[in-house]
Image (cartoon, rainbow, N blue to C red; front, side):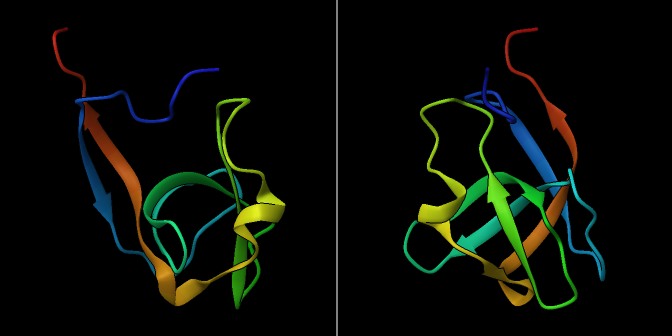
Length: 82
């Protein structure tokens, strides 16, 4: 699989009060810094993350993420060199 946001693309994220399973989100991870992943198993307090590439960090490695660490949902991206 390929990255959720292409290298060199310009991505726009919007903070939201709720996030659904499958949303592509920007997260300030306590161990890995700012990362873009797909949200899965979303609850009112936390969510788990999943990468698109087989070599991506596993959800177990990333662990559950507190909702306050989610900086926004991907709403638009402009690909480079179209």
